[in-house]
Length: 172
Image (cartoon, rainbow, N blue to C red; front, side, top):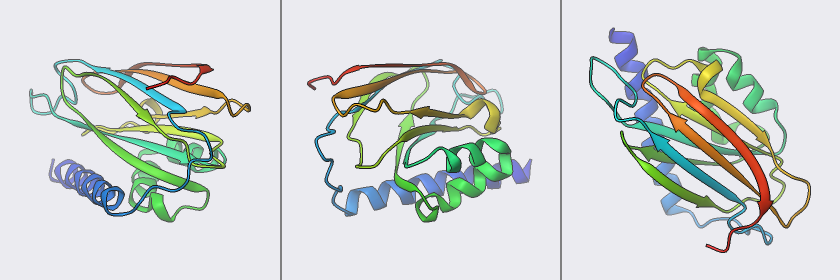
């Protein structure tokens, strides 16, 4: 149990650090890809169940050039935790953002895409992390005028469902 608490605390501190970094540095140029990513997220009221209580999930949104870093993170829980520890230092990772998802939430988030982004990864950092159920990777459409929408349903222990669609960019 102590290991689970330490792992959760570590994930929380990583999320806080990444949030602080994103607040203090200006965003890179987006090369005309403003709002190229739309996330529609809903969570159950018993989200991230631990000790019979619901908790916040840190949702990592990762932009990479290729799928290799995301595939490695999905390989095992240890690989996923290592990736989250060193995500900003990992070759091919262009941007990492963290969104805190509350139990019972229904939100829509828009993100700008960094130039050269070929893949978008979503990692839901649950207390009882299962990388095979919580790491998702999506390839971006080739055309610059296309956008990607990811619909996520987050449950008590893992991602319940995830769908990707492409189309014209939303004018937020």
